[in-house]
Image (cartoon, rainbow, N blue to C red; front, side, top):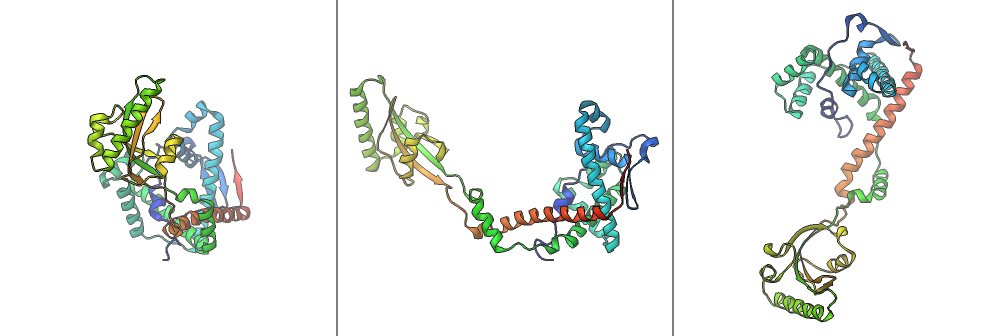
Amino acid sequence: MKRGTMLSIITLISALPLVFQSPVRAEIANRVVALVNNELITLYELNKRMTAVTGLDPEELKRKDEDAYLQTRRRVLDDLVNEKIALEKVRELGIQVTSREVDAAIERIKQTNQLTHEDLIASLKKNGMSYEDYQGKIKSDLERAKLINLEVKSKIIITEEKIAAYYDAHIDQFSSVERVHLAAIFLKQEKTADQEEALTLFRKGELLRSRINNGEDFAEIAKRTSQGPGAQEGGDLGFFETSALDPELIKIVEGMSPGDVSAPIMRPSGVQIIKLIERQGGSVKPLEAVREAIHEILYQEEINRRYTTWINELRAQAYLKIIF
């Protein structure tokens, strides 16, 4: 099977809920709420699916928010209608799923959710579902996966032109944020308005930078002289996104290479000397590096579009009656 021509079954199946609600009262279980060709949708099916979607019993949802209840009921019933139509097409095309495929899919579910077989059985039992019923549910979803592959996915072609156009239009998605690892020596000015003190500190900063450039260790000098953050760690300030720095510091850092030490920087409350320890990111991934990811994005978008069109065409040809 060609790559990308079949919807990832493990993704489809691992998304299935592992919890199901207890059956509603027996007297309403067989009430029909919709006819789809020769298929019936019962109130029991509808309520069970609504509970799986919302996590609430439908009556509880209705008491809390009637508008949300009505919207959810319409949406879930619409999904069930689509499933019945798809099931009829499965039968028409003779699509089959073997017990081995069902067992393999369940094994993937257990691995994805880190469940033992006993965990799965206990979860199903707790929520009123037998293992045999669960196997039937998995089988139905595998059939629909094969149907989607046959009727929709096999006809999709993503051209290089589309991939390149998506890359150009979403270049920011493929750019990494630049981060810089900085260390600093800070010489505090006691009297902020004293220009003479500011000049003295600036000259001291120049002397310290000269010593560092002549081979003395920045971290050791920082421990002995810095009065700012991280002094005891050799002036280490950690990583920052470059864009989060103040504008003046951005200009200074942009012109530095790892290992460089800046000239003294005058601040309102003292003098700062910056060392650029490391620079990370700030690059754009080439198209070749992201081609597969873009292909998958465009492929899934096209699947969704074509499946919606396809199922709507089948609905237009189907006999559909909603009974409420």
